[in-house]
Length: 84
Image (tube, rainbow, N blue to C red; front, side, top):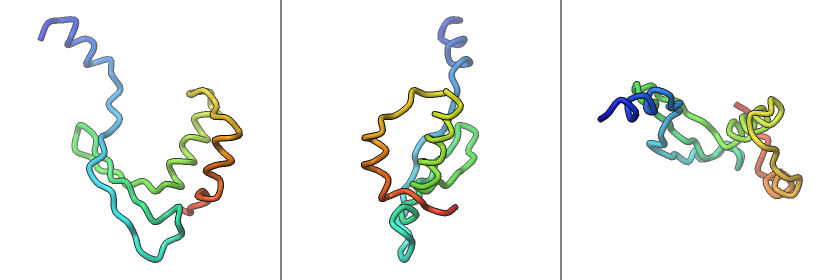
């Protein structure tokens, strides 16, 4: 690995990788899927669909990402509302 590759890897924001998906029986549809993520350091985080939607809303409000269309939100609205 040369110096440029090393620099680029250090500048990357390691979020997490998906290591599993579990379906929880008896939960509301937005909560029934739980996504298990793992960081490069081995830390694990479980996210429900509802928490992912809340993260997207927050990112849009903070202007971290481009806003999704009203059409997109209308399509996913019936699946949202998971409590976490």
